[in-house]
Amino acid sequence: MNRIDRLTAILIHLQTKRVVKAQELAKRFGTSLRTIYRDIRSLEEAGVPIGAEAGIGYFLEDYHLPPVMLTREEATALLFGAKVIETFADESIRTQFDSALYKIKSVLKRTDQEHLDDLEPRVYVQKRATTPPFSDMLLADIQRAISMRQVLQLDYRSAYKEETTLREVEPVGLYHYGSGWHLIAFCRLRQDYRDFRVDRIRKLDHTGQTYSSQNLLSLPAYLEQIQQNQNLEEVVIFFTKNVVRHIQEMKYCYGYVSEEQVDGGVQMKFMTQYPKGVGRWLLMFGNQVRVEKPESLKQIMRELALEVQEHYISELGVHGLKD
Image (tube, rainbow, N blue to C red; front, side, top):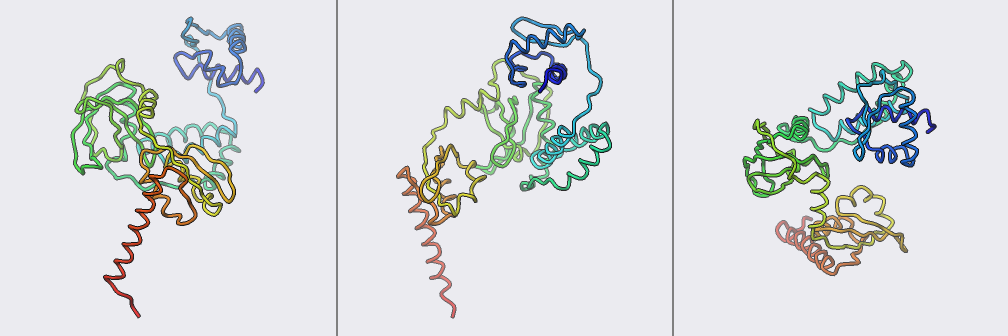
């Protein structure tokens, strides 16, 4: 990026937040802090009213650029974002994003609009299983509650006890992992942090109360704490070349850490709390996988294999063999 483009990008970046740190700008543009300081000084000399607070950052004093035209590459990136949102967000987010995208497309050059229209049907993201209707309009409300520090009341359906409980929670953040969105919040009923699957929230209401986030963990701090408290076990698996290409996405669901090429295939390392779950996954690959360690998982595999064998042998005994 040349200096003129970087100065323009810095000015746009300053418009996106109330205060922006020099370190943030240096990281984004891959430059030194010294370069950022020079760039800020150049913008000030050009008449841009940039304020600064020592140790806090820079801010614009009542100044806005006129609307900025997007490049074709930027517009294409938005199209890709729309495809991902269509798959991984609920209706409340999809509706608002579609509205924003129409406004953005309206200011594009005609050639860029035609480019997006041509590209749109050629990009596809596999949709996940449809979430229950009662949870399809919640993400926008939850985001609003997080930003405004509002206490929420949830009718929450537990997956373990198959019962619905009423919870008042102080939202910490939204986190997507596994197959869906999770609300991380401080639960007033349990007096501790809890992970609520959004698709198990049957009803969500605003209590009208607010809370102070001063004593709450941030979302990154919560996730780091959870990771430190997990009792993870190291698992090493050998996969033959025949099956490696079939597990490139699936491996991340089972605590994948690293891999190395070995004779005849790939040896992968996993860290997991649920070795039996890993064992059931490995069972589908038959003799194309081999547990290297731990010994406890090898024993789990033997038990699972016997369980399957006995199931089908007993089935033969019940139904008999047909001629």
